Length: 410
Image 1 (cartoon, rainbow, N blue to C red):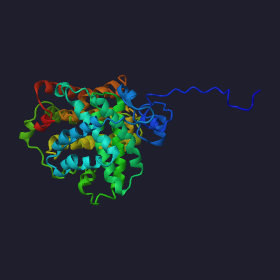
Image 2 (cartoon, helix red, strand yellow; image 1 turned 90 degrees about the horizontal axis):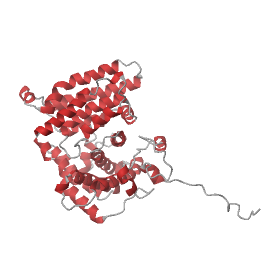
Image 3 (cartoon, one colour; image 1 turned 90 degrees about the vertical axis):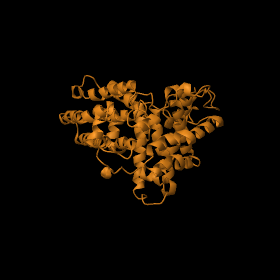
Image 4 (cartoon, one colour; image 1 turned 30 degrees about the horizontal axis):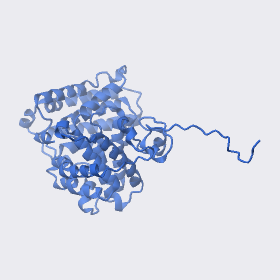
């Protein structure tokens, strides 16, 4: 027997590369079990678990999650962000000049020096370009959706070590990056109706909340042009808002009028169903009740007052719900999804903003197709959100904008 080379005749173990694993496992060059919404490795490390969309998975450079540089396309994305995309966000903040300047000046400044923020900015710009109809881009053969997804995935990979090693000097850069990633997460859901898209977006909410823990000791620091980023993490204070008059309320039409008149009974129906179920643990019931109470508050200020910013009023709910409730949503808990669907009815009111678009309608339909239709506890709980989707479609056919003339501009 030949013993000079003991490993000569050893058979090489076959290895099947996973082309559909999550971006974390690809970067670490480890096998991904591809569990949804979070693979085993990401669950163990408590990392956001993001899967490349199937239509662009092969375009990601295998196991490195890097982007093949295309200076021509990247230059166009940056130019479009500065000339158009940033202004679509700033226009929603006209009554807050400091916040509007955040999008037109402060965030681009961070993107020019922080690679993760740069990819987030280009992803957001590409999502914006993708939202335009083909007739608005004659002769343009660039696949903006694929470009958006690639930059989005790269930004997600690069932001994780920034969060883990966060310090006072980098807090503004991290928050600016996550702020743009949060916007990407919403735009990323355009045209999608799967639970994994919701999970990815909620991971941004979780990351933003983790950074807020560091913020508590830094809120009074002077961060110059990035100060609005710090302020954006602070819940809004509606105590000085004025309540709508009866004349204003009676002047509402379509979806706004119907949601205003029916949301209380719809939310009460959900609460009654929750309270009638003895199998929920105290922790789960607390998470449900807090999320539903918060949603009632958001609806009150959105529909019965003059909020200083309707978009941020609606988004106050996902930004403030408890971590326990976020975990229930990511895990596909039926009752949590029902409450989420009722929040999405408010999102329908923002449908004319390009980055929101069909998020509300697709999300409600996703929930309806996800929950167990044989579960009698949930019987009738999605009737109201689904009716709001139909009303939204009717409004669009009738040429009614969602909320105010500003929506028609975006």
